Length: 122
Image 1: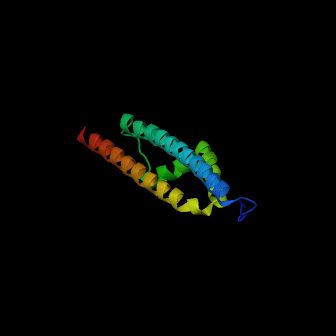
Image 2 (image 1 turned 45 degrees about the vertical axis):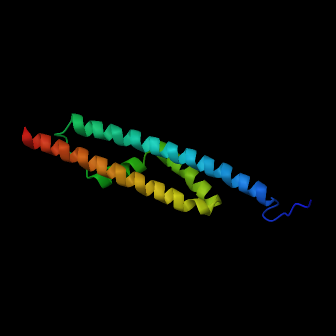
Image 3 (image 1 turned 90 degrees about the horizontal axis):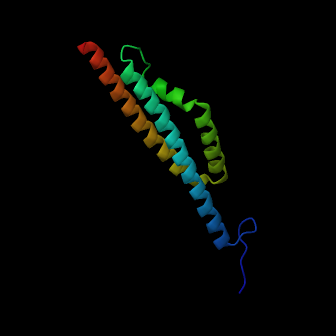
């Protein structure tokens, strides 16, 4: 039986195995990114709920602040390096990030609205 070398010295089976391993690594990194974002957003939501009279920026500004957190930047950098090496993963990464952004922005908007209503009620 003859093995056909087709891509950077790997045969098709080896190449498929490498892609599967890299996709698993990507999924772990995306999960880590999600956990960090949820923790940061949760802390901000608790601040909004416990100090409703304090002025908070709009949800988009808070989201931008979350994105600039050093721990999150580190994870995102690793995801971006993986995506550069495997461009076929970029759609999955973009979709996951967009879903997370929508969920967090909605949650922050709701928390902010509830806090404003509580202040107006008192």
